[in-house]
Amino acid sequence: MRARLLLAAAALFLATTGAAQEAAVPVPPAPTLAPASVVARWTAEEARQGVAVDARYFYPMTNNRIGKYDRKTGRRVAAWEGPRALYPHMNSCVVDGTQLVCAASNHPAVPMASAIEFFDTATLKHVRSVALPPLSGSLTWIERRGKDWYAALANYDDGHGGEPGHDHRWTLLVRLDAGFRLTGSWHFPADVLGAFAPMSCSGGSWGDDGLLYVTGHDRAELYALRLPEAGTVLEHVATIPLPTGGQAFSWDRSAPRLLWSLDRDTRQVVASRIPAVHAR
Image (cartoon, rainbow, N blue to C red):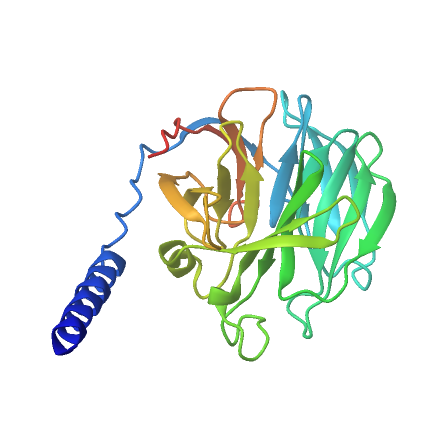
């Protein structure tokens, strides 16, 4: 009996030691790739929060204003401005068919509240608004992928518009169904969250390679992420230096690996070529 107990204890010790050793294996850091190469630069008055793009135009925006610019000449062809009381903080837009789909919130007010605003790309006329139920963060970007929508719920450190007890580490990627009901969520990896701090995820979009690309608020970096095979933490695949700071961006679906971002200090919209990411 005593021998069996000793054997069982030894087996338990080996099992727990092996588990500890396995848990202690560090995750290799994501590689930093060659920087993006600039293709074009345009000055745009509204280039403060984000930029959307289609095959003919780009659409810089800030809070309650959107511009529409010819991407060949850089000339503004249309503009929209709404009352600040109704549109206190639109953070990003993306072209979805014939509409601009924009992520909006009451940032930096608390408690946080978010909405999705829809605009006609031809006229920039406001089409409709979807007020979202209370969520654990502030909506900064949203994009359709198949039948689902993916979005970021941003959280911020104290003094930067966050809610008490929820700092930048509470930032989430969420999946919504066609009725904008929550169906899934994932945490960002620790090193990417550290790059976001003290702010959060400002931009995001799925690449044609199946990876999710995101930016923070300030750093001139683009992070390539992948949904995990299991668990709740996104995998950091690669980092790409950008010619612009953080903020929201858009992939150009009419050209391979062309990304449109902005420099809010100079009010410039920049199109740059992003190197291919070879997932590990």
